[in-house]
Image (tube, rainbow, N blue to C red; front, side, top):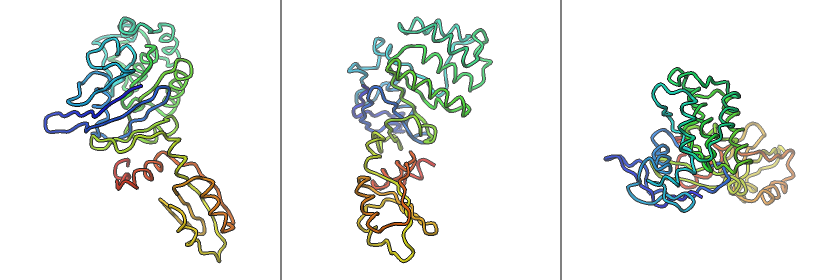
Length: 300
């Protein structure tokens, strides 16, 4: 488990990370969401031991990260701007990481290089941005670590490649107990992969919750009432977070248990009623809106 307690980091007069307390559980995909400048990269660099917090502590499996080589063997950090040695080839970097990570799998590396169709003997300086991202992911998955930290990893990958990488993360979780921590400014990139999501805004953590827990308490329903029925009395009994009407079709996002919500709506004997899945954006909008934040200004 990763624990951050009251973590703060400044760069001169700029407060990059502001008093963050957070737990990241093993075996789940944690998505760190925020606009550019929200503090995602700074936070990941502190979790990776690249930066030291000005205040607070960060531990991985109860061991401090900063200046702790044995702890760093448990994770692989993929930065937004990947660093490779000058004039190095993928094979050169693989040999380097073999020395850094005891569980590095040369067989896994060679298999992934073939599947991604990257030239192992070509100089990395000639690779495109997307190819460099792919190589970083290959090296990270080959390292055999318990955690993998990804800063805007999907940026620069085409849609097909993104889905392929997500599948590899899922396979790593199933086969090796991998725990991915993925930072992104784009909610849609993490829509179908995250179990838990944290929202950073101006260095502070607005929200960090398990998506399943949120989905148990917030539900989306479409309903059509009879033309002579006024739903006002029914709506007053619901804790409605968002409501939209198009013609005779109402779309409602409400807080409460699904069976209770359905039971109240069925009292009106509706013509049509259907429960719909909530998108990640809708979850954030409803979950943070009640706290007084205009989340639409943050995520769009």
